[in-house]
Length: 196
Image 1 (spheres, one colour):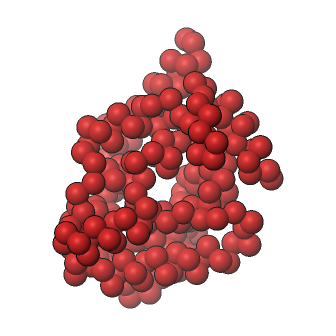
Image 2 (tube, rainbow, N blue to C red):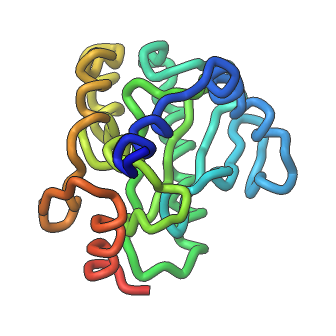
């Protein structure tokens, strides 16, 4: 089987894997080996499969499946989530900046704010879908979500169909926009921008 075809097939999730993925965050919130912080309102965990050298998820304890269920009533919660994410990022002693944002159409149920270092250097970042989920409009910056909630009272974002198209584009370097047809080449290239 050609390598490209194998990579594309690995992008597809089996029904059992989708079920686990959809609700896996609920279990991860309770996992003391992943938990970095917890209070009455939020939990911060290390991403189980980090897509960068530093990758955390900030989750509300309130049951909020996704962005589209947020209202203006959640603005204080969102501020608290970002503030805690920034505090955690400062403890990482990283020379890189961090991004704070959400996947517009996440594969996992339960709202979660990604706190991720900009290097996107990880053995778990294997496919173009992984890459594009953080480097296209599939990833929505915290401030954009917050602003839309203030202005419109809800978050709409791009459609699920548009999101799927974005995930299947050939990946581009998020620093210099060079296009790549293969992930190994992109992963080597990214080290030029983010040396270890």
